[in-house]
Image 1 (tube, rainbow, N blue to C red):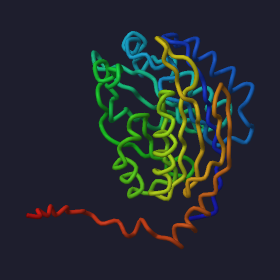
Image 2 (cartoon, rainbow, N blue to C red):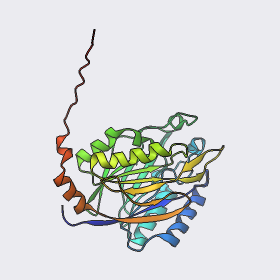
Image 3 (cartoon, rainbow, N blue to C red):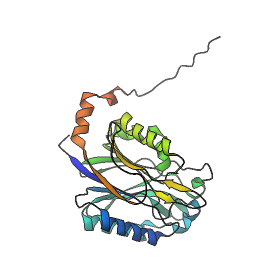
Image 4 (cartoon, one colour):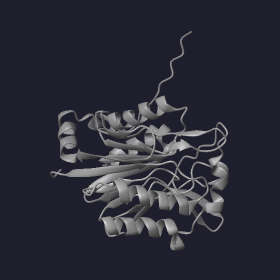
Length: 274
């Protein structure tokens, strides 16, 4: 792996429920005030356009061909000369709706779309009632670095991240709107995914009040391949950043090549003791 350093920036925010244009304006202001000039990749949280309110998903959904979200993120990428992993927004194809992450290169080209593969429908949430499951995992190469994309509840399925690691991921990304009562799972699982796959991890979630007494967690982090926090924003809104060294990660992998020891199949033999 050639010498490669990447300046990652993550944007944490509290979305205005159900108001796409207000949230576009909020992101615009945060970027204008806080985006570091040397940023290579900017990452946004899940459903930043509408907030975590499933009942608002379908009414705020956009077609890709005339999406104000796509236009906005494309313009930001081009004007700032950055790659963008655009969190997610609700897209529609006829009467089918998806929770979709768009990815843009430095020229503002839409280079990838990932739609959430696991839909959270427990504890009063009913995402699966409004949203259709996506068509599989998507890894995207930006400036020579491979990013494995995931959204929120995908985090609870380690198979997703192992598949990305086996496919050659350098950075695992989870864009979320994670509930405030699940701080321990959020921290433990994001750090575990980084450690067990020897990858950098971007763990980004919304912050602040949602509705009906519910809050987002915040606690967004950039994590290295050993589970160390390189940057974090624990509450409120804003941007934090960190430089990651891809060559350093590959040097670590060479010294402790645990990914080479993965078996294709793990057969469980059930033993009955009489």
